[in-house]
Image (cartoon, rainbow, N blue to C red; front, side, top):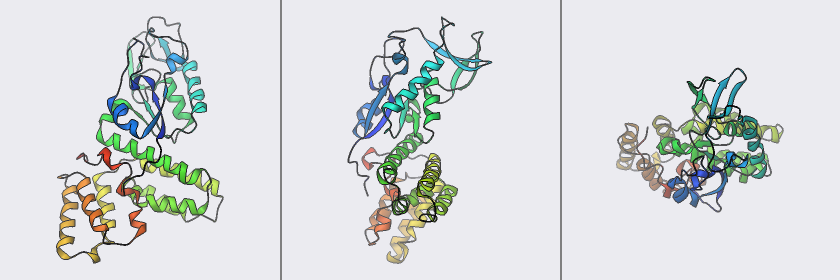
Length: 322
């Protein structure tokens, strides 16, 4: 049930996170989790939009400024410098260069690449709010709204890290399994593998996807697949909580209950309850469930991505998160 990685997944990334000295001060922000761990699975496509628009290394700092004409990216020392449109245009160019990417990792607190809660300033130089988004990141996300994105700084949070990597692997799977040649059979097969994973993330999404898949063969497949993908990625964007994971494991346990002895059923119930109560991480009940699954000759269950939505050696399910 280990996720097979036959090739690295193309992922866009802020170049400074790989240790390249492209920051405004000539430094970098190397992220060792990304360079030392995730590089085993991700093929990075590095971009520094500020360098690409000719700001140079080192360079004078820029920041987000809230104006009557929207948020602008201007020089801190030279207010006449406005690179808003230039940075946004680099997003168009970046996606044209790498249309195959399955995710993007941005540098936090960057007026070009910050994706969430960026500080904005008033035109008089005083802080206004934290409602900004970097001009490059904002344009890229608008052009590719289904692309899984995250900031490197937020990946220190175990829940955010698990969710982002889960979505990247799922999006790559979709591209390889369905998108290249959509058919009703491929769509049904794809969802049959992801059914319980989606249930753990978002029950309404699970129900909506079931209704969509039921239309396979009775409606335009391209339109159906687009709607499915939008619903699927939105469902996975919800974090799989203890409640969601517990509910999913109880459903899976239903396939096993008649095949297990009384003591085995009792043990499984106790371990799942310990997880629900927050006493053990998800890997504990999952390990026991997978052990008992060997008693069942059921390819449908064995192919469920819920068991390993990403490589188990990453240990992302070892963290005891809610």
